[in-house]
Image (cartoon, rainbow, N blue to C red; front, side, top):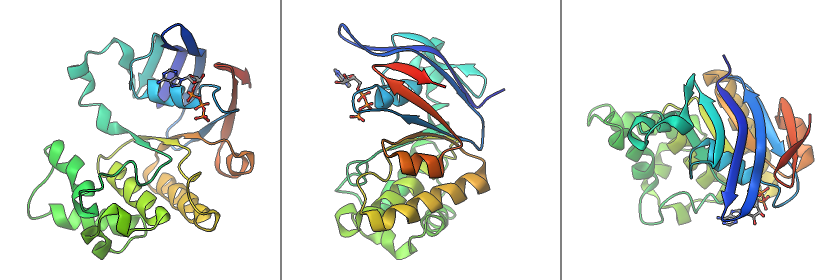
Amino acid sequence: MPLLDVRDLVVRYGNVTAVDRVSFALEAGETLALNGPSGCGKSSTALAVLQLPRPAAGEVHFEGRELTSLTESELRPLRPRMQPVFQDPYGSLSPRHRIRDAVAEPLKVQGRWDPEGGPARVAELLTRVGLDPSHGDRHPHELSGGQCQRAGVARALASDPRLLVLDEPVSALDPSVRAGVLNLLADLQDELGLGYLFICHDRSVVRHFADRVIEMRDGRVTSP
Ligand SMILES: Nc1ncnc2c1ncn2[C@@H]1O[C@H](COP(=O)(O)OP(=O)(O)OP(=O)(O)O)[C@@H](O)[C@H]1O
């Protein structure tokens, strides 16, 4: 059974069909890239997989559950297991909260925070993504773009996900720090067996990082 099995996904914005019957499957431990020109529907596909918002039609099977047929309350316990990482490292973390609190928040919201072990778990997550635990005292704007994206990954990992939806995760970063973040993601995948749905318009990055590539154009899969 694949980790993620998407069948005939359709996303509409008003009368515009942004994603038109897209199907693909993704195994645990695998990176599947969605590639294609701007506006072809990559981000819409990724958000529909996360049920943000719900797709207009199609099926999204994740860990054996069909998500589009679930109510919001049935979906809630599954949401932590599929986490997004977005392009803008600063946009995905609240500017008002310290990094430590941003990473702790999923643990608290999911009822997995304990005052004894919680801070140590946050420090461990920060260390795991290549930050120093002291970075936890800072606010997002006090970190570089690469450090901030690492903090975003730490926050995603706090939910113990099985799937990361990586929407242009290194595109906004300085070219000199991109490889470091991609290497981190590759290491985490090896270690944790995560599935990655990887959106990237840069073909050289895709070739290097993805196990398989799906090409999209005008909302449809054109290959393979
Ligand atoms: N919230 C929205 N409301 C209306 N139309 C939208 C919305 N989001 C996307 N679209 C339209 O849907 C189509 C697909 O957009 P989408 O962002 O999914 O493509 P993309 O391949 O991810 O593009 P990019 O690489 O530029 O992010 C485009 O025509 C876009 O204008």
